[in-house]
Image (cartoon, rainbow, N blue to C red; front, side, top):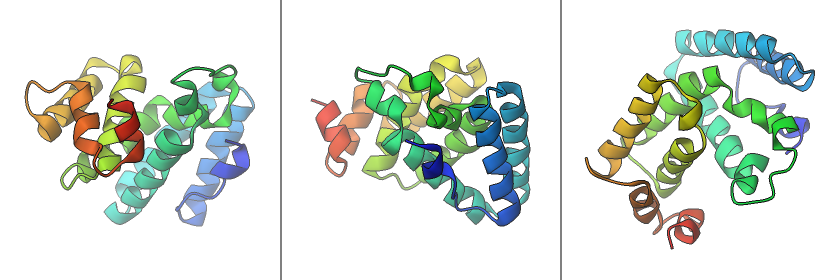
Length: 170
């Protein structure tokens, strides 16, 4: 993925400018600035209309879990991933403030894609999260598949309607 692929999120102009600032800071190696700007973005999203947060959450999950170099690299060959602009998609404020809340909302009426995204979030993101965020992801797994469910249960549940989940669940 290239920076240009991330330039047009479904956000109003003021938040799009903030988003582009996050990417610019990240791409310039200013990780702390990117994180602070991401915290501001999450705060402003939470102050706005829920539909706006939902649209952005879906867009972010699509980029992170469906288009990201990291997920292609998850299964081998991820050289240079940390330098890819899409790595910025998984910085802490976006994971805890956008991705996890979006998954929680979507799991009220889950699709195969949403279940696979939850699998990907647990596998790829939870190890970098504080215990309360990991617990939240584990709670979403239990809500989707049952108390004693394992990760493969998510893929098996998603497989009938999600091609990637079907390939990964075998």
